[in-house]
Length: 234
Image (tube, rainbow, N blue to C red; front, side, top):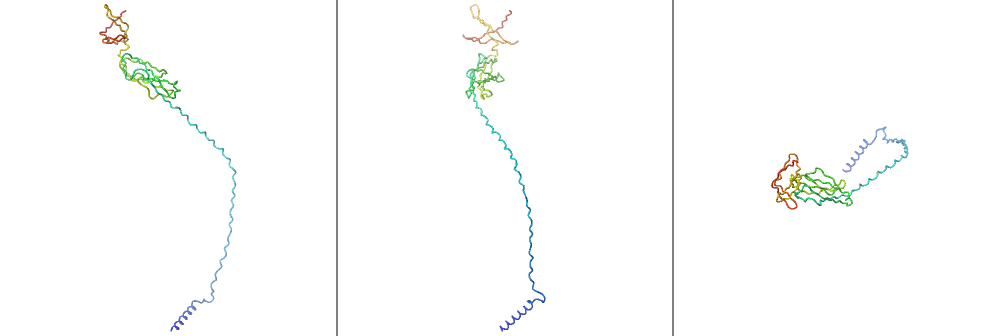
């Protein structure tokens, strides 16, 4: 049975080959076609020629600006001012309206002391500073009670002491101080009483009453009990 089945399979295989395996008449097996060889065409290369430029004229070197010298530093000036005589601080002056102040200055460097000058001012009397090369100032102030402040400052050229020396004082004289003066004296005797003659320097229509005034001298003082006006017709 197995041999019959094997024979049948072989017959089927041969029949299949006979039907599909043979080519029709007049046809040949296709042959592979030769691929024509490809020819390469060389492309000429373009040659570029570069002309060498002539050497440029060198520029002259830029001159360097000179280095500025540092500014010379001026020596620092130290200036001080001192009052060495005159009315004391807060002093009241009742016997005169004339005051005298003496002062001096100091400067560093010390070599500049010969260039020292001064400026003075009295607050309540002067409007501006007064320049002077002296070391003293005498002032005749108006009569009448009033407070003043004396200021003085040393200077060298344009440099000034920023902290002036100062004294505050008060003139405590009568408003008529300097307007009435003693012109003559007569010593008293058994026959004549003492007599003091006064001269006045008053403005027109200005009058004063000297009753109760005190006259002081080296030997003492006394009060005027009664003042009368005496005319000299001749």
